[in-house]
Amino acid sequence: MDVTERLRPLARWDLARGPPIRAVFTDVDDTLTDAGLLSGAAYQALWDLHDAGIAVVAVTGRPAGWCDLIARQWPVAGVVGENGALALARDPKKLWQRTAAGLEAAPQRLQELAEAILREVPRARLAADQPHRRFDLAIDFAEDEPKLSPDEVAQIVQVFHRHGARAKISSIHVNGWFGDHDKLSMIRRFAEERLDLDLTGPDGRRCVYVGDSPNDAPAFAAFDLSVGVANVRDFKDALDPPPRYVTDRPRGGGFVEFAQHVLAGSRNMRQPGSAP
Image (cartoon, rainbow, N blue to C red):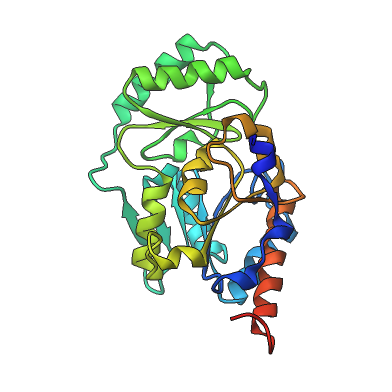
């Protein structure tokens, strides 16, 4: 069975067969956004989940500076940023912050790595949000023009690896860093410390991960419930494993579709005579 056949339509997810959803962990770029913009409908979907008592945690490769704003101003329980290097959450008195264990900023090593990539892949460029990062190097291949070829993207990953850095491909950037952290490790830490949820136990059946690209694959594998927005099909050959379900609509529209499905299922579960 190929990956396309393993991507089950979201409509096949019967929420009545499991416990109520407690938390949603979601990628941002091309999962919540469309062409870099957060639509009114997607933002309202975040509020609808929030108002229903479902915690939403943004999980992104975007920089610490962006994460500070998301944690303070979006209707989310918190944000995991820079591919798991840090996590932030809004508290009444001050911003709650965590960084990956043993993590140290490595500006000189990252600078040397950036220079090597720009030298070896002439059309490569730093992501426009690079100045707002603390622990991560982002190379843009699809956010701004010109878009790079798959061969150029693969070459960028090779340079990261040759210098001893980890590298992950999103829908727009190749992100690289020094250290053992990743999105999934910080997701689990955030769930335990902020939401009192152990994702490796029964609590995992109350949580969902939503994403769109290869760097979401570890979370697709770890979560019993995972959803890809429709554009995840663009990476079907690089997904191992794929998400359990896929929406009909792509990007932010797919997230809205997902939120509506979860909220409708939650309402049905509360009706008399519905499954426990």
